Image (cartoon, rainbow, N blue to C red):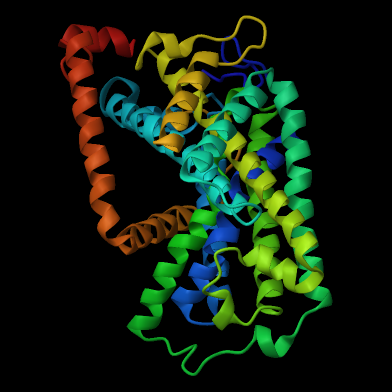
Length: 427
């Protein structure tokens, strides 16, 4: 049966247009990442050829965007990935496990992402003032509280806040690009070392290491899928929002990284913890460097704001589906957003910071199945490049599977449900 994609989930309202969707995606993508990992990418590649890693990251993100666009347009509901996994693997069988695992992951990964942004915020603020360990914790924890205050309101107001944050984010990056363009030294920017393009296994290992950082800096283009129930005209605006945000960020990243390399020699840049601040200081002086540091902190707030907003819809969707604790399905009586889910995830972030259906698809993936296949290969390669951290990801999946089985046994759901209840559920 065909569903109306302009009808929101119970209690939620469709208050986000294309402009707000692009803004939310872009502010999550940027974050503090490109300002922190730039030096790491240059070091991994061993010279200005680091730009290849940023371009390769953009290519992988674009391929992945085809997948998210088709799924998001077909099933524009709260929770995004949760719904996709449930429908892809069967809502009464393996889909329950796979979707539950995603909720389990979100309860850990989303608060950790917000905490990472808040800790990065406190660290980067160290350029402005040296803080004691206790002071740094107070700053990172206070940032989480500020984000909750900003998010504790109706989705239409959140959309306006997201556009304001987006203006600050894009404005900062454009300023950096302009500064580099007007002081650009091609000899510095393209000072390639000997063997810079010798395509050996060592070169590809360096590219893999660098892409772990660059693709991290592109993550977030899928965020509006988690807000599917709150996007206007989702079958059009979700694909548009995803592709526009990836394209916009790719252009900004490549221009900004080129600008930096044209001012700061790469041998110096690869060892800088505050590369953007150093860049501006060299161009305009100490006062301007302090200002751009403040704007980078603005960017960190914007990213964490968008991350927590999208993630809060995942446990909510699972709870409404009967696959998670019912309390997470509660919606604020006047502001119409899942406030319990938001507060729980924010609480965890605070603690961490201080210690698919059969209907016709509105968007069809171009060149199917090439983007999907290349995306899987690319993500698998990057996962292998993470090295020792692979075991932690596998351990999280194992713990999530155990938690799902314990809960499914308790409530007598698949795979512990009787055949009669399974049939009844599928009807």
